[in-house]
Image (cartoon, rainbow over all chains, first blue to last red; front, side, top):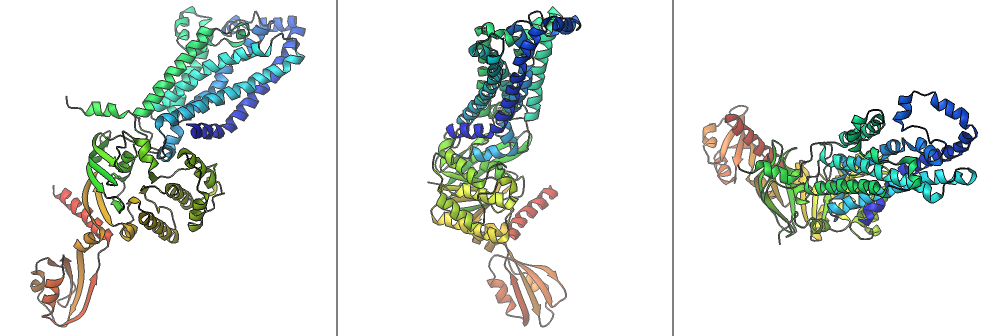
Length: 282
Length: 303
């Protein structure tokens, strides 16, 4: 599992650097803007109030924007969707990309079990996510020294811990779908649809309470955003991790049961036992 | 212990039967050529042996082990070259070999790797994306051979290689056998199978239709004999010899005969006539292979 983990992580280094630096740069720009906002609070409030109320409600209201938690929340609202793009693409490609190219045949012709391959790659994927979010967190922490935002580095980590849990669900959903569907593109599209739908439904549920039950079924609803600096909702966090773990276990189980697709085949990858059930005499 | 045994192996992809009861035995230490056109089931057989796919029925044994029950132990003793080789483009040959050796939990035998690269005229320090198909194939061959496996599963090993390197690869296969390895060698290039394989199996529609020693199979095949007589000859006299038939005739003096089995009775019959020219053509493995497929096609059409 070790060589697979290291190899996959090294292969992801480009993504880690590009995503990490981009999201870190976002923090470097956003945090100093809090002081600008406080200095011009009245004008900014007038500006915000000029937006349609539906728009403000969609983003959960802007009433607390003059507090560090409210301000950070307004800036981090879309982070799970933006970072989710990485998770969905990386999750759906974790095994299916090599499988579709035929590379997995050669890797699995070596003395490594499917479970070890799956575990090594999943561990590298999670590590890459943590590395990117660490860059992002540092980007938000470094300007704190020269900002009036009264938030410790530890408190600042909590919104990214919440982001990690939500985005991990998107990634493992994509991984599971890539094991079941006939191509990684379909898996990425389906997982991406779940991610975007969750974002919009959570916002729309602020306008229409009837949508709340549907929104609650989707991971984005459990993203705490900037409000996490006041304390992480451990139940939500644990629940999201449990869902991710379940999806990862299902994906791993499916990967162990089924045939490895022929390169370029893109066929539905049924586990062999399903074929046996289908062909069993009735 | 046998190299490979499959017993009534079946595998379907939806409605397509890739293997329809394949029973095969490859002896330890031999080079076995597995022949068949595209889609006959050659690659499916290898993928079952490596537990990349699971058969619907039947059993398989590789070096005495069950590939489904103990895939890691099987793969530790096997070297595999896939038919459709795809390597990571950004890596050099050297990095790929390092990764694959790490998967085998062993240090790279760089002396061996460099020696093989030199024999195959390959630069291990160039990124894969800058290599031709043939050079990528060479990396595939080195990774299959480097750990000196007990069993080599080679799917079209000379695909994309120039004739000189092809000969070098056939030499490597012979050397692997000399070192005690069993070689299971899929190809539809008959000349190279004929050059190295001691026994061949012919697969058609997922079934083994023939297994024999390569030389015996060729000897058993139809020989063509061209004869020019000094004077016209009644073709019925020659055509009536058991195992001999007239294939074509230009005139009453020039005949082409088809001989099945030994030539003795034909030669004795020809002795009665003044012959000005005689030519026999040794059949190739390709002739044998095509005969199997054409015969089956005729049978299928008759049905």
